[in-house]
Length: 440
Figure 1 (cartoon, rainbow, N blue to C red):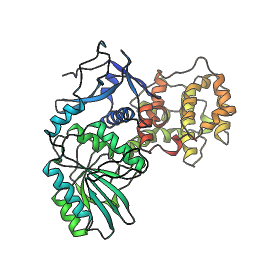
Figure 2 (figure 1 turned 60 degrees about the horizontal axis):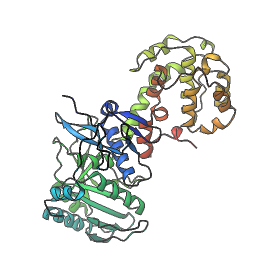
Figure 3 (figure 1 turned 180 degrees about the horizontal axis):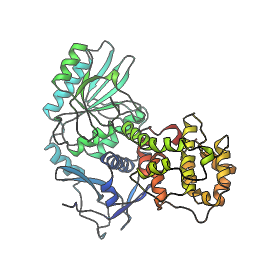
Figure 4 (figure 1 turned 90 degrees about the vertical axis):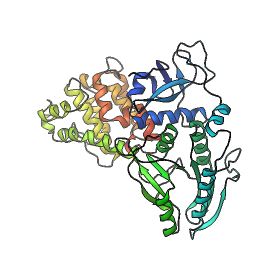
């Protein structure tokens, strides 16, 4: 069964550029989910957001999702102000007022929601570090034009302020974005506590949105968490973690002290999004690195068998030439320099600048200048583009291997932190780019 696509493609801001519906559908869930968050953040005025526009009419679009055989599948959808003559327009969405009326059945707070808020407050007060707390009371702003009414707000001596939001019914993506952006500016960690979540059960999209923001962590106040909180005299929550297949593992009970609070102020117990992604990227490079490292300087006039085998084992393939192998070796050397483990893998030069300058003299190697410029632009050595290295690379502006080539695809697979805009965006937003992929 094919999912009906709302638009053929969208133009995304920054370095991402056009992204077709097919490309969107092909993204891993953590990536399209993050892109969905970033587009909504942009809509809500967040600085790090991503703007998306329909390439048929130019109107703003967002990423919605639909259930296809029990699996969430993403698709583009227009906001209400779209030009209705657009061939991919599919009608107006519910107004926020009407949607909330359906969501809450005319009530802004249920009895269950209120009891959960009061239980959290009760458990927080057990802590010897307890200083203050409120339930559904106005919290004046420090760095915003207006305050908010957090479900539960509290402060613990030595640990600081926290906001707990109880998520019982479907919460709109815009509300999630607004609240997270607000408390990030206020420098207050916000924890979403989900009600009705169970391992092995289908997770609705609003819960998925919250779990994504918490780096693959789902926090619940259940009987096990309450029992642990009482015995330890401090608030504990049951934490479900996403496994590598996107399923929720059985929960563990965690305290606030065990959580990591990142820059966006959305805490997590274990990072199940950025850390596994970075580990997978490192692993895909190991075999080829070992083969190139065994390449003796005296043999670098020919591609040795070990290197050919290592390239052949990659899921992305391209025709090999000596210059391309040396280009890939150069990128490995750039990474090693950023890790403060300098190792010149090609040429007899003693440093990165001299190595690239030396290789640039070769006509065949010059074909990969655009690729190396892109690598350096996104690396810790970006300043080299303002020096002689940049001049030498820029001279070779013709007859270059470009982004749609198979060689570029291989390099992007090996070094996505430098060459894949979507993956760079996700890791950058999560503060998880490796040091060698952060320009100075």
